[in-house]
Length: 79
Image (cartoon, rainbow, N blue to C red; front, top):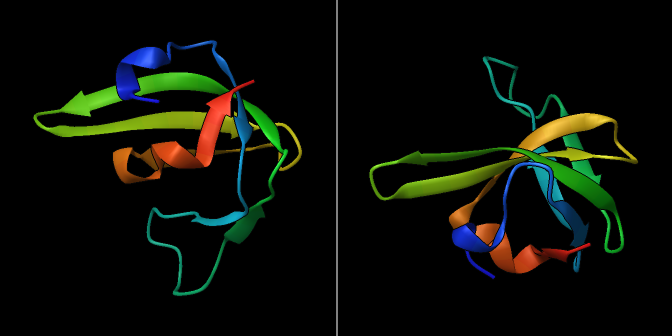
């Protein structure tokens, strides 16, 4: 799927397990979580800056929001 296939409010499901990290100046290794295959979430924001594209997804099980970069879009599907 591509960036254009998702809108804010779209439901998504993880198709593989992958690691996500909290940024914003956190110490190395801090704030690392796993999104598991089958986890669901919702796209809260779509962002585009030049050629860069990413989705901001709030994951239901984690109760947290993480960025998903364009090279990771194959890790999710519409849910």
